[in-house]
Length: 152
Image (cartoon, rainbow, N blue to C red; front, side, top):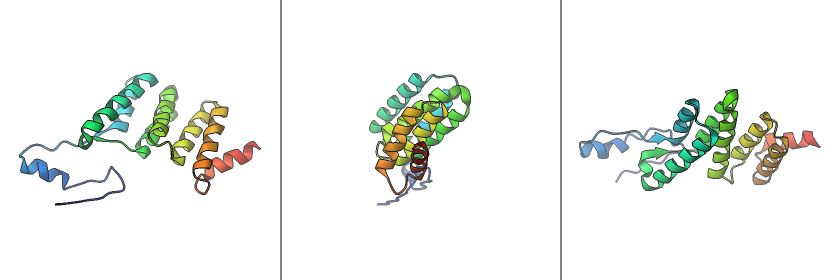
């Protein structure tokens, strides 16, 4: 039995390919759900379409976990990239909301969503997310603490 542990889903697992080699089948890399969301957003999909795709892919991932990769960091990164692309800011916010949905206890996801809301002028929602990030991780949510301190 071979066991390999990793902290990051982007790490290469050379042992994954062994089973395919033994079965004389081609190895297929897992689908990156965040990358797929980025691709459809850039092809013109709206926020609702991106959310539907995410839910379909994560549902499929439950049945076939080896075929898909999704991480909080990947969702945050894609959301931030789309926010910077101006016309896709609504889709970027949707992806950041998905990051919070996936990791509701993550101060990082909350801070990223708060920054997104702040960028598009939704200040009240941003402050609520900053407060939640600070509640979740008072020691680590330094951006949230700073933003909330300035608002006082």
